[in-house]
Length: 82
Image (tube, rainbow, N blue to C red):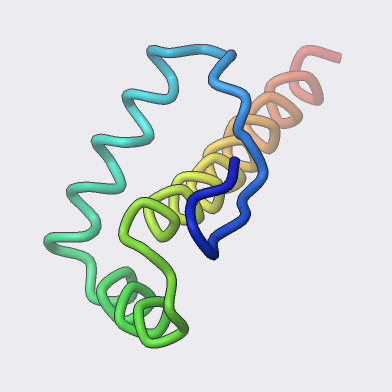
């Protein structure tokens, strides 16, 4: 999508809306209380990213964290079952 001088890729809004909403809430809490997240936001802002872009990056990072935790947990359960 183009807006003035800015040219961005149009995002797909499909997917699990409840999971997306949960990730969004977690990111908002981290923005307020988590020092590492605050430092990340400050760095990205100095790079010229908008708040919306920063939140999108944080949600992606958080989704990878959650997925890794879920898959590690499931692998442990599968090993015990075998």
